[in-house]
Length: 162
Image (cartoon, rainbow, N blue to C red; front, side, top):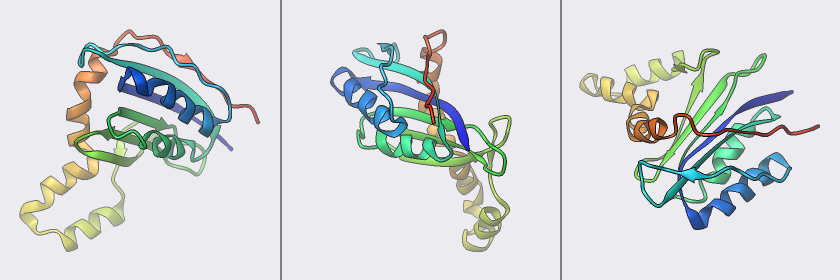
């Protein structure tokens, strides 16, 4: 079964851009050439985004491949498919990698077992902070200026065959 999603590279040093393309190419099994544009939130850095199509789980593989460059700010989404939850991965140099399940409309979904574990293992005063962590709030706060700086930027469409 194929899934689809989007890779948002919010900021990358110029020298790392070819490596990002190679990493995405390696996961999707086809040559990828992204359209890089200046990232106004960090002068001197570039941004790019592309849609992708590939086997279920490709979102995680893409995030894992991009994680090799710890200076990148990126997000990878994988839309839900029949019987499989969607996923969102966010990476910020100061916070590392975060992963969450997503619903059909893109909301982060926190599972029942996660909440039950949280209620049993986390002292009550710390529960709100832990919920914020499960929702990826710190990553959203860090990435929002980079998302806004990318409004109107071109998108590259990628489709894996087979």
